[in-house]
Image 1 (cartoon, rainbow, N blue to C red):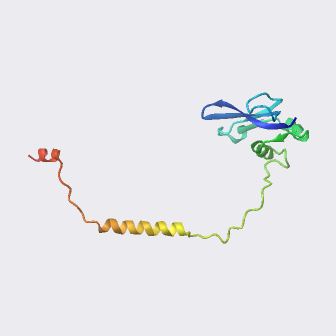
Image 2: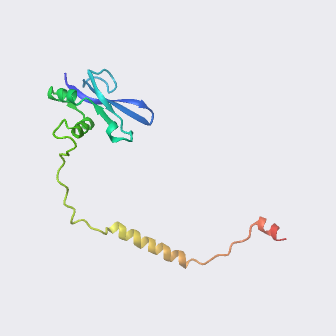
Image 3: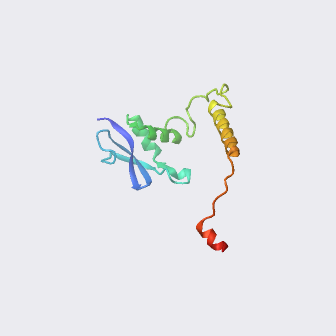
Length: 139
C-alpha cells in the first residue's frame, strides 16, 4: 500500500478549495482518506490564509514514507517541511546576457505597421454618398 498526500477538491463551480489529505494511492481523488492535514484556498486574497495545515502531522507522514503530489510538495516547501521555511531551493538564476533586445518578430511587426500606414495615406479620399434620410432632411 502506497500512501500519498494529495488534494481533494471541494468548494463550488469556479471557486475551488482543496483539502490536503493523506490517502491510499488506489483511492479516488475525492474518495476515502486516512488523515486530513489542512486546507488550501488558492483564490483567497490574504496569502497567510491560503494555506492552513498542521505542519507537525505533515512532517510525520513524510517521515513515514507518504509521497506528496507535486503541488503539495511545493506547498510543503513554502511551509518549511523540506528545509527552512520560505527559502526556495531553486537553481541559480539563468545567465540571459546574450539575449537580444530587438527580435526579428518585433522588426517585422514594425515594418508591417509602417507599410500599412503608408498604404492608408496613399488611398484616395472617396466622398460618401448621402443616405436617403439625409436627402429628406435637406428639403
